[in-house]
Image 1: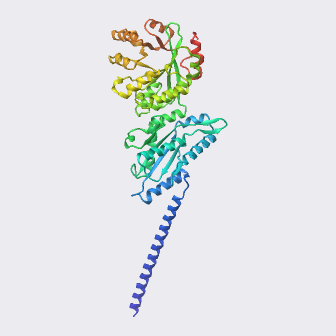
Image 2 (image 1 turned 90 degrees about the vertical axis):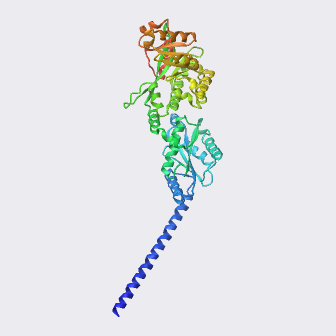
Image 3 (image 1 turned 180 degrees about the horizontal axis):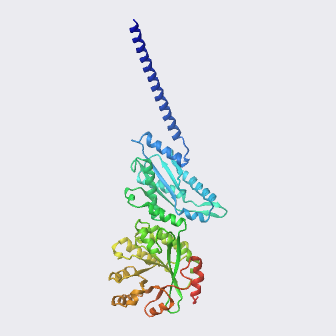
Amino acid sequence: MYYLSSTKNIILTINLMVVFALLIYIFYRVIKKESKSYKKRKALSINDIVRYKVLYKFLKFQIYKNSDVNEFTLLMVSIDNFETVGKYLNKEEESSYLKKVAANLRMNLPLHGKMAQSPDRPNFVIYLPKIYEEEQIHQITKKFKLSAEKKINIRDAVYIQKNVSITYTIYPKHSKELDELLSNLKLTMLQVKRQNGNLVMSFDKGLKEFHPERFEILKNAIKNDEMKLYYYPIFDPINREIYGTEVIVNWDNKTNEIKTLRDLLFYAETSNDEYWLGLWVFEKMLEAHMNLLKVMDTKEYYIFMQTSIKQFNNDDIIEVVERITRKYHVEPRRVVFQIVNPIEANSSIKLMKNIIELERLGFKFCIEVNKIENRLKVIINEYLVSFIKISKDLILNEKTDTLDLEKYARDKNVDIIVTDIKSIEEGNSFVDRVTYLQGNLDGFPCVKEELLSLVTKYRRSL
């Protein structure tokens, strides 16, 4: 009897434990379901403009809740050349400007759309709760772009109006991982900035072949004022009057030995950064010459800038250089693009077309000659070259092929500039053979603040 009683007690205890465990499991499931429901309600109820961390958690939930069927689009809206805003605004005014841009963007958010300012201050990340056909996304990004580019009043008569760039990625097409999706969004934006911004671009897997770290290195060098621009004189060999200047760049960084714009362009070409970087130098160069060119209003004077041939293969080069020259009131005829790596222009239809159009607008071309080659005559014709620069060593050697090139240039009305002149006395050797000299004069190389006084000192014909 005692044995049977003990067996019943054991069975009863086991049953109670099973029931208790079942109740705990049911309770756990109810709590988990309620927690998931709460998270869903909380995620879906967040404001349309939120902090970046809140948006990140929301996106995580969107991927987690139904990863197999859920689809959405992420946009990044970035203010182009935001660093220039700091010239006119203090930190408080910068924040006010960004808030007003965000308010303009908010007006175009669709139902359930979300937006946050990213840790990179001039960038906004936007969540759109679906994916779109190509024409639809074109219209949507156009609206965002126009709203973000509206002129904004900061104080009194101070207005800011900047172009913006937009990139977008699609979940799950471009990645099923949120961090990778956001990384792809930023990578696409870096590529847009390499093309000088003011574009809309979708992520493409091929973009991963570019090197984003090079872009960041160069941008930070500019931001930290490490790149210094200086100017060398171009003068006639008889009376030493200055007829132009060439911009050079000194990258003030102990970790590299880049001391010329030529070196800097070759460095940038390895990561396709030569286009936007060249345009930055171009704009700084024109800004430095504004006051000087007013004095030279009716006088002959040229600004030389070493340029990568790859820059002229860009679709937007004509529009951009025209816009910059208008901005600084510089006539195109003053600007000489000095090609550091000339190739036959007929190797690219786009290149030939852009060169012809730039020539038509009045811009001039110059090529550097460091060794004599047969193709130089072809290049002189194709680029409609106005100047050639020849190193003094080539001129002094007086070899037959050098003399032949000199004669060909003179027959084509191409001005010859001999480079690397170390002194006035050295320049006397070239009086009868070249149009201009480039090299040392007292006070040079100089910075932009010294340009006007130095040039007018040597330009006695003013």
